[in-house]
Length: 223
Ligand SMILES: [Zn+2]
Image (cartoon, rainbow, N blue to C red):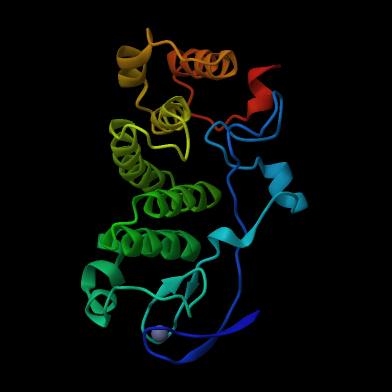
């Protein structure tokens, strides 16, 4: 538990940190326990290895501000945090409190024009939905995530992840959403630069052809 003072309303509250992390596609070896969209696989999460508090989402109980640390500055004003769309997450009824907080964080970053952070939090939101079997909302937020990935794909020289790494996340999410036909029709014939990426993609295609939307890890690709 940490005690933080809120940047927006200046009140103090106790906060607990949730740990979550994704993994850089360049660092995980073949056969590693990482899900196909880069999330640490369940076993690693349960052991606590690899996780960092980067994604912690603290929410001020007084004004509703959500941040990694409530004392973090934001350019947004109280009007934003008071708005209906922020407070009710654009009318999405999430099953988990964590998903709700991640979605609010996504809204904050989106409004602040911080595209990459907005993606991370919609990603964490999708994972929080998965953990609660909130499939319907998992699809809604992955759709949002894919529109952000499409923006990244249209940006030349964007180097946080490579073009193909963003594509791999997009493929995984299309399949997880059950968007099999579009995945197959749009991408079946593309070629990815690295062999390891192509192997993951071929695995994805095969699963899509079998109408399989389950969560798989990199180790499953090489079984
Ligand atoms: Zn506050």
